[in-house]
Length: 509
Image (cartoon, rainbow, N blue to C red; front, side, top):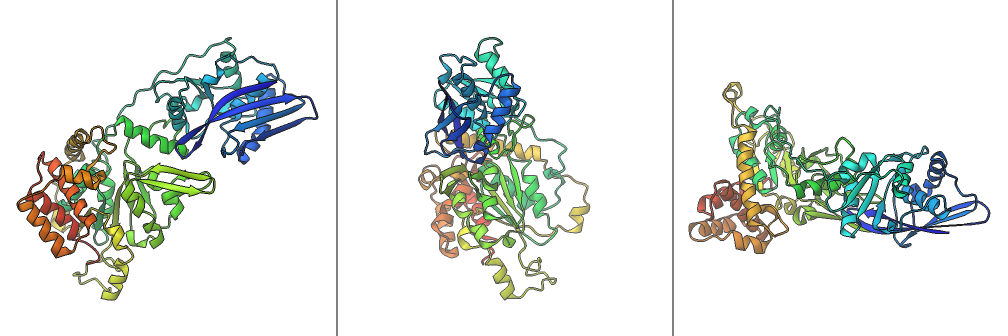
């Protein structure tokens, strides 16, 4: 007898429908699974055999053959345990599945006891189920909150194999999980990283506000102890709130990486990923088999912070160039290619010299050759992709001892949010959300300059020998500065400030 069910296989964030065919007939006992399954799928034989027995049913003594179609698509993970077990019971006549079973998707790993264990990638699974027109999705209980974020599909939370069988045979029907609304998480007013606690460095705090408002990349350069790391960590408290679409994008990536669970089923804060300079290329951009997202994708719509920037290997830094430009990363393997989103704000921190001190500081012991060699660890093309270069000097004693508090993160975040709201209105209907994502054609449309502003830009391009990429990035930053000031047109002051952040601390000078 033949049974036929459907599931979904993920490769990256993309899903493909898998037809699970189960055939049983007489013969010497044999259990075979074909269709390019990995080791986890081949090992599912013992899990399924024990789960069926412990659920009170009989595992067939003859030949059991399972086909995962299409046969040329590689399948990964234990997500097919549940549909295979149901197919075996249907094929042996122990249960009768409803006629519309082909409108349902089944995923889940089985324990020996017949309990369902959670799987990774449940949010993109639910999303792909809707995209392919399915009406019902059966998931493990621990995955149900995450799956219920997706509308237009009935999600059934299942704790055991028997629970699914009782529902399908209309003995004990399950109620679908209610659609779970997305709720924003507000930042704490008493956060230890509140901008109000940072003394001095007003220029750096202004740059952080601009970067957060427009999604721009930022480089902080200064001696040890000047507060570069504190500034970067505090930047996470002034980022704008996530929209529903952004939260789902981020959660899908974290779901595939296995970072969501019943307690953290949705990411409602912008990510802040801090990487040590010993991290490998694969750890940053992603990889493996199947390809998993790296740190640059886990930081999607948030901050990717690289401390001690020049200490990263040159090859590791160079792999950032393409995703910083395109906002996505494509990982190619022999089994295929998958693309993960990587629209991040790169925030990097570095010392100005190998010894750490400013060149003008009497404590500086580095020779000009050593300084040049140290600064050349960061290539020109990578620096060209960083919009704001900010010098962070040491704070003097009078400011450190002052009890006066600066602007709070809450106050700055309000301005940042208002600027983002203006960008959302500007780019409504377009596949971008921030000024930093504008293409050259959009820059020409939304960042026209003339008169004194055009003269200042022309003078800067000629004097500093700026590239074409730098020209467009300066205009994007100027557009963000104008948004913060609720200005419609770009003025000379907006252009001049954007140029100042571009050139005043280029480490290659």
